Length: 222
Image (tube, rainbow, N blue to C red; front, top):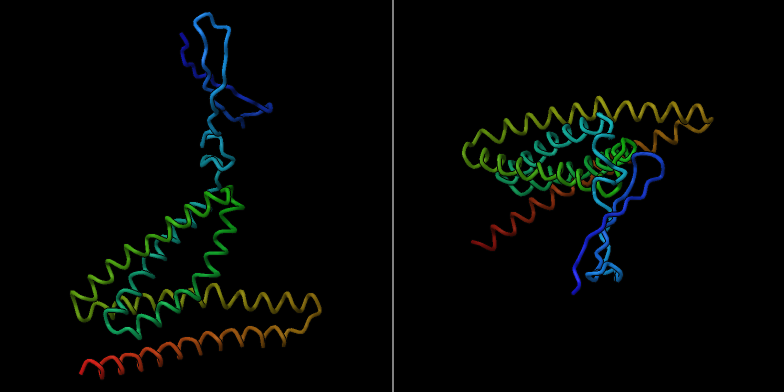
């Protein structure tokens, strides 16, 4: 008769970073016959991205992103309760602001000790707070006629703070770096100005398109 045993093997390279593998074997009663059946992959606790080794700045970024995404979701939902044009405009603004922001946060999470997979996972969990904000925004927009305007005022302050404290100083630093490299600072200024104009044109285009779309929809319903 054969009996199943599970043996655990540990490989160590001289420090505390090791990996456990479990081998399932079938042995006879005399203990002379062994037949390996399978192995279990490395345990998650042996991952290079253990939470105890993560720098505190990573947790601060995740907390700040969660609050920021919550407010973004609340603003977008409140915008759609007013009109599709406002909702689409806010969605475009959030997209243009969040895309480079999330890429930068992802790089900081990687440098803080997270693995790529773990950084993607925690970043996704942080982004899901936008759905909670969406629920709150819908409740405010549907429950009170003036509630959406308070949300818009708060989000306007958030975007002004981001632009004045983060984006404008970065534009100034890019001009200084161009001067240190003996490059044309005027060309850098034109590139930055073109980016601002492209964003403004996109917002105006979305507003005009959504307004015409609403007019066509209302005329068809009549």
